[in-house]
Amino acid sequence: MNDALAWIADQLALLADILIYLLPAVPVTIEVTFLSFALALAIGVIAGTIRVAKLRFFSSAARVYVDVIRGVPLLVLIFFIYFGLGGILNIGRMTAGVISLGVCYGAYIAEIFRAGILAIPKGQFEAALALGMTRQQTFRHVIIPQAFRIAIPPIANEFIACLKDSSLVSVIAMREITRAGREYFSRTFADFQVWLVVAILYLVLTITLAKVVSIMERKFKMRGYGVSS
Amino acid sequence: MALDNVTFSVGRGEKIVVIGPSGAGKSTLFRCINALEEIDSGKIIIDDVTLDSTHRDIAKVRADVGFVFQHFHLFPHLTVLGNITLAQTVVRKKSQEESTETARILLNRFGLLDKEQSYPSELSGGQCQRAAICRAMALNPKILLFDEATSALDPEMMSEVVDVMNLLAREGITLMIVTHELGVAREVADRVIFMDDGRIEAIGTVEEILVSPENERVKTFLAKVLA
Image 1 (cartoon, each protein chain N blue to C red):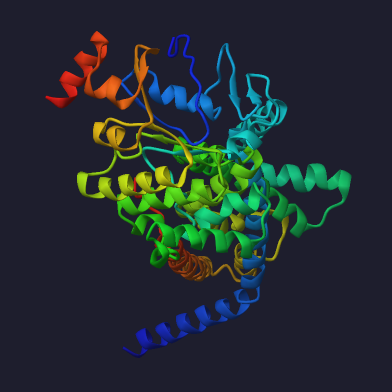
Image 2 (tube, rainbow over the protein chains, first blue to last red; image 1 turned 180 degrees about the horizontal axis):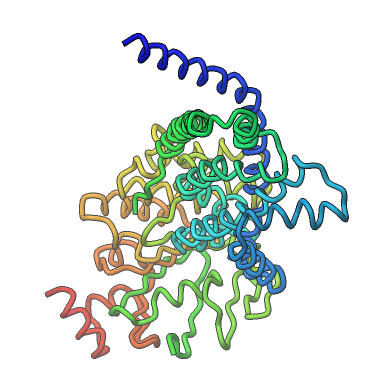
């Protein structure tokens, strides 16, 4: 019986030790996620809008961007940007990581946002034009705000996916959670326990994020979206 | 061909009601007047400004042509007040205060002042359409087009909107109305246009078209509608 208790105590001590080692890596994960997603949002909203607006050259360019990025594994993209472009332009790890994730998720958000715009009834566009608004004014004041509200749930899902994919920048030696886990593992070979704590940390982050997002979704939903006719 | 050689003129302050079977081209005609549809040939002249397919400042002309849609098309992400002030600030370049004042005057006139902070999804159909009318009127249009404005409303709500149309008619604004409600036509119209198959089959007063029509197609149409 004592042996069992001793074993449990040992395990808990190990887990605590791992947790303490990993905790400083959590802000790094959060920083990478938020910065990349901010970039991805900017790229995605612009690319998605351009694709719908049918601006000859730019719309095709946006389509090529989306197709290419969605056809290449994110891991490969990270290597390409860090070692490939990074070699030429001498960018740091954080920059390379943020750019890779941002560019990758930008493509997915572009498609989501495009779908959001297309989901808006044509009558909205016509009503704005009938009031004398130009195409640009219509997009700015009527279409894009509505597309945002429509696109929030799928974009929120992408945000959580981005958080998980931030683990991939561990391959370019960024000290985020996964990397820190590997370091601990290589020192002590406590493999199962390390990855258990790593998984739990990610889980805590994603669950928290999901909660925050659902609060935001409800707030935007109550603002009267749900057309009367 | 949706419209075939449609020619007529509308005097300032006149009320024109357009009737006819579905598919006659009535909505298409209205949508040509505010350039939502492109015309292949011919001209539309509004107050000395000619609208043809090469017209550059279409947006400017559209602001002078108020349009009320069958399905309202209020902007769901804005309050009623926001709906009415948006075009004023963006298109007419008025200040927020001026626009709000104008909006409130209109809302009060049509009985919606207490709904100013509501969103379209919180309003009934009749309230939505009245709000849509305020939105169009806020730009001080030269002519107001109603494209089957009551067709999406049930009879109760319809009378709210018809009352508004009567109010506007009495104020002297130039009106063009597409409607299936012959009662509206009788009450409001100075002239009635009967369209069928993309053509104007008959133009005349209420007396000439609705009460004692001579045209055979008009008679057939009226018989069907009044049956």
